[in-house]
Image 1 (cartoon, rainbow, N blue to C red):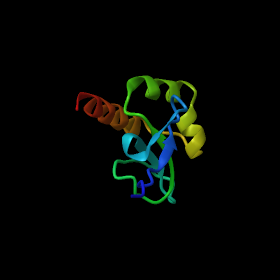
Image 2 (cartoon, rainbow, N blue to C red; image 1 turned 180 degrees about the horizontal axis):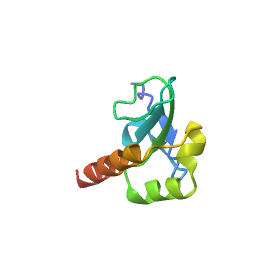
Image 3 (cartoon, helix red, strand yellow; image 1 turned 90 degrees about the horizontal axis):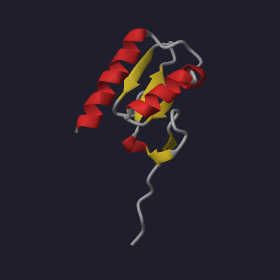
Length: 91
């Protein structure tokens, strides 16, 4: 029997590869709007991050998310991301 292909993505915080389903996607739409993409299907440029505070802190400290998306991240998106990370950690 064949093994099913598992797409791998790199976390912008810790720079390690993980299955796409284990990461949260932050996407910049073609219009330039930055949102969280929990389903992983929205069109636009995206970056992936582990649902852990340590990865978020590393990514924010190094401005990795802003650099990858080529846009500044609004504070409300960062607040949403922190809230989602805390919900994911508690599951």
